[in-house]
Structures are given as C-alpha cells and as structure tokens.
Length: 124
Image (cartoon, rainbow, N blue to C red):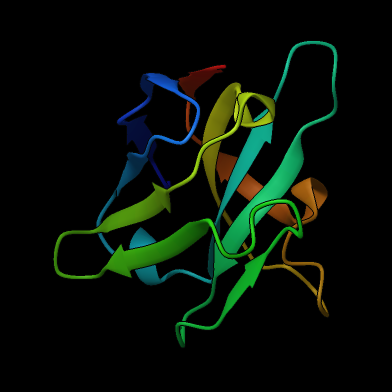
C-alpha cells in the first residue's frame, strides 16, 4: 500500500514562493510516476507536474518556468517548488503515484494513489 502525505501549503501574496512536500511510504518514491495535481473549488482536478523513475519531468503549460518538481529518494519525499505564484494558482494541491500510459503523465485517471491534499492560497 502506497501512502502519501502532503505538507507545505499556506497563504502567500502574489509573486511569492512556496515549497510543497509529499512524504511517501518506503519505495513509493521510485514507484512508477509521481505527480502533483490541484483542484480549485468548482473545477476539475488538473495535472500540474510529474516526475518519472528516471527523473524525466512534465509540466502543465500554466506553470512552466515557475514550478519545479523534484524528488529525494533517500528521504522518500517528493517536492514542488512554486515561484512567482499567481492568484489563479490557488487550489488544493495533491500528491499522487501511478503508472501513466503513453504520455498521459498529467491525466488524473492514470494515478492510483493519492494524498489528502494541502491548501495553497495566493492573494493579489
């Protein structure tokens, strides 16, 4: 069973930065693909970034150049560094693990295990 626990969310002004962390159960950090998703009230959950076993990454167009996904295998932890935050980045952020097929790295249905989420609020 893969367990994922997010932390690091909070409130920040536009232009600020936050780093999210996702503590994964042993071996999970290198299990298939891990990703960050977000969901704003009334909206669908959308993929933000993913990282594969080899370290290959994928990003949503809306966050390219601002967000960076990384993982520390020794610490079993996934990270999402978020810079130049915008009010439209406000959402609940979720960590997920799965085995996406093809290039579906940011498709929510490709992921099996999910954390409980951490709230990010960006004020203008």
